[in-house]
Image (tube, rainbow, N blue to C red; front, side, top):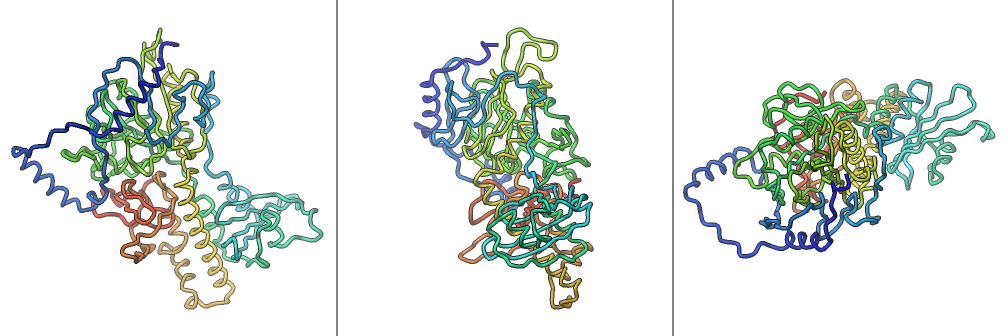
Length: 551
């Protein structure tokens, strides 16, 4: 076992990085290939038929590194980019504390625990909806929209309170004896947050308010996950080379069988993660599994469509580049560079390499799996911890570790700066929409205003019956999200100083934002089967998804 991982001198690693980061020299000019002129013209015609969106999604890649590593020995699975910005576990240098996760010996599958993305998400459903309770709304001059829910426990001695603000949700249980008289909504709100400055809350009288409030509280909860799977062969260092692999070795197929089962996409009724299950335009099959009550589908690069002549393989990257976490299976000794795949979404990579080990058993023979993890530096810690050494000899343990690590990695990545900033923007918009809807509907029930005076009230009522309105927007926003960007807001597109309007509620909107064109001011969203929670992202012309919704 001790011979599985061999540490290489730091100078070798630096020399590799210097070679990879340096531009290619003595490059010969590319002569026009007249023999392939017809093929080139045909490819251009196909691109025009697909629309101009693919060209707009392309990005400028660095010069390809045509490097042959002649240094013998075992290299680490992952090397950091020269610019930094990533942590690696296990660290390349022994004793280094640069990695947020700490390797521990004797890590057993029984200790693997899946993280919860939002601990307060299901409190309202569990403690409030089954009981008689009241909800209130208000607009604070500093905190913005507030939605308060209060319920009296069965013993009539405790009050359970939940306060929703644009930044977070606060929950608490207070004894009634703490108050001289029965507390008001304002007093209860200030018990949770002393920054509350409102003097009065409006009561919610709308009978279907619990449905709207539950939709808001659970808009981040999803039991579905999708992850990318890259196949890196010996000598492959660039994004184009890795995404261009089509053949699958027996070892790679065995690794995929560890992750899940191969399912036919045609007519598939489970979680599809943006893959086409009607027309076969995203491949014939995929890897799918059910794990701890969650559905997981993998975007395997070799199973996604291959486009001859497309050096960036956008038909593959449109799915994998939209994922937040990806697996990399290596065959050979070439390390994976953290920023090899250019994407604003991919924040974590889990790299697996099959290695020789001493001895063996019936299940694994003389093979074992070495694992290493890398993530952007603003991604907080997540478990389970790697064993020491980071080698798995039993495939059942490897499966438990990888699936748990993948799910926890995605949940942890949402706390990174890029996602948390967009998520805050989305939550603020959703909370304001919820408060406005609850207030308008309550006024309608009280008869304070006629439906003609409150158009949003009529829209809300129609939405609950299948038209537009808040609840239908929420259903579209949270209906089995692909989870790569399930609830992150995206700024409006600005063109020439003007701001384009948001699509209406009845437009066909979807939620996967393509990573190559993501920016603070623009965002394009090709073929996905889900929608941002804030309702942004019009489906593009060459999207391949059928009208069928994810189950």
